[in-house]
Length: 214
Image (cartoon, rainbow, N blue to C red):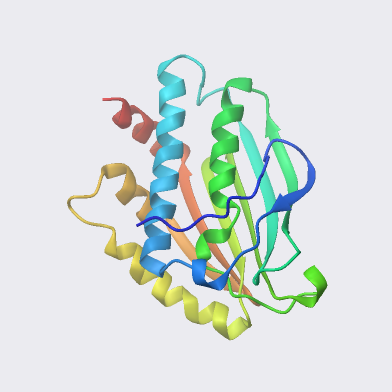
């Protein structure tokens, strides 16, 4: 079962602010569902890069990109709509734009890992806040998803369940790329935020893309 995703419009390729749908607490996915979707999304993104590489439209040795944006969704239904802040979109290869845009749209709601917290936005309603940043450079590929929790304690207590849940998906039947993503994903908390970080060094990424092509 895939996580329920907001259907609000989002354009990751443009700067500024834009509307998002209201988040409702009953739309929250379970932790295993959220982790499964995260893994599927990263796998699909890497497969898209491999496909472009095979067609000669992406070169791991020449191309680089970075996309970052934050989002804030009101937690209850009402007249308010959520918003996003597109912080960065750096990419010189136009062939990558659709792939980066699709991946961005799957990242903006934080995989249901956030808490609904008091907010000064949306006429005082609680909000669900998250941020993502993914990039490809000389060091390799990295993805960082950040979610806001209700307190530093809540953020810290989420680390154990996150790590345990990711390990559930590391099986002999899983694809090599999925197991490699799990091996290279770490978790940390800072104040009231949780960070989920996947880093694939350049050599590892190159071998994965080549393996996926076979």
